[in-house]
Image (cartoon, rainbow, N blue to C red; front, side, top):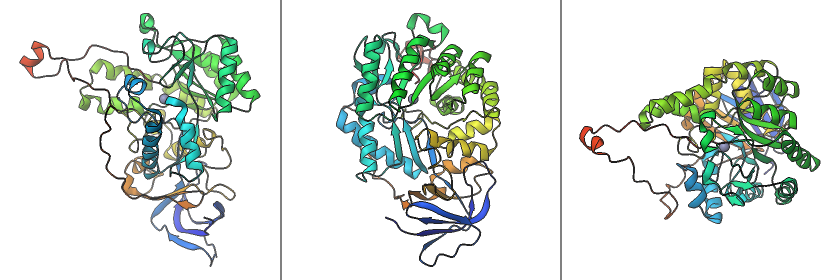
Amino acid sequence: MDETILIANGSVIDGTGAAPRKASVLIRDGKVAEVAQTIDAPDARVIDATGQTVMPGLIDAHCHLAFDDAASNAEIFHQRRNALSALVASYNARKLLRAGVTGVLDPDSTFENMIDLRDAIDANIVEGPRMACGSYALINNLGGTAGTLIGDSGITGYYKVVSGRDDIVAEIRRQIKHGADWIKVHVTGVVPRMAHLGEVCVWTLDELKLICDTAHELHTPVMGHCRGAEATRRAAVAGFDLIFHATAMDETALREVIDRKIPIAPALTFQANMVDFGPKLGTSDTLIRLFEREITESIDTIQIAHKAGVPILCGSESGFSLVPYGDWHYREMEVFVKYFGFSPLEAIRSATSQGARALRMEGRVGTIAPGFEADIICVTGAVEQDVTILGNTDNIKRVMIGGVEKSLAPLPVRKPISGWRLASMGKKLTRDYMGTQTPPDEPFEAIELH
Ligand SMILES: [Zn+2]
């Protein structure tokens, strides 16, 4: 376990945004002991990293390991079994390792079973990245992003409806008792007759404050799904510790976020995939433009927040069919570079040292410096010039967590699990479609994003 390792002669990106430098990294007792041009350590096992980038492992601040690349919320809500979905998630966790991910925040899951996966990983029962997780996402009976698919009370999939102050307090305490690292709140939701307004804020400021006060009293941070200015403003004022999406902020919301330096994880990889690959998938142009707008309308505000020192974290939203595990964890960095004007090193910082906040391990992981956990990857190529190098798993040569190398051997090929997927009959068979052989342009439908 506590092997002494010398990763020699690599190009070291430390994760702080600093330029790479030729150096060796000494690892003792699972931690970085020294970073220097020459290190004398005769007792160490030497790993030659000549020609490779040596950098902190990626931290994905938004990934749902239990969703298993579902094509819809209905599949997650109705086709899943508790123990089996935890076992399937343990398979998917190994895909993350092979993509260079050494830390992941799982915001909400079915059956709360990512708490079990986290504990199993921590106990060396199964292999996976370091995990922090939420439990059921809190909503009230107005609902979350899945609209009327969610019951008016109780639990649906990864949601729990809470009504009234006593219920809110009791559920937060219950989640913390059972091991949640974070409390997740869907601050916005879709109301079908108001769909033209997009997602609307479904909580009062007082309710959001109650959530934060209750969780903070028990040393537990709060994270929120927020689309729209008012939701982001209220979450910031209420005391949220991490805001997902934060799209369409206005000046007031932006100021509240900046004043408090609340980390934001835009999680726009899903949208970017739709923009770049939607035409291949037969997605209608209307829907593609809608997704693109969600990215472009965030450009100014994310840039201002970033420049003002707000930590911007990388989250991939992996777990849906458009963002399958193992393929896209690097891509949020690409989005930051392409749309938000981050330098590659700034984007890497977002995915490493800044991402440590998502794990509640700030100052302990995400940086290659003495005293930090040795969560390190070795990658072929100059990542500081092109972050998409990380998208090809062939380039990821070593993955280490706490100084222990993880297996990168190919995973066994999965077979279908009976009853696991929601059956679809495919396109609508209109007589027009039969005649023309071109798929009809689907009318706009609200997509359940969370
Ligand atoms: Zn999500």
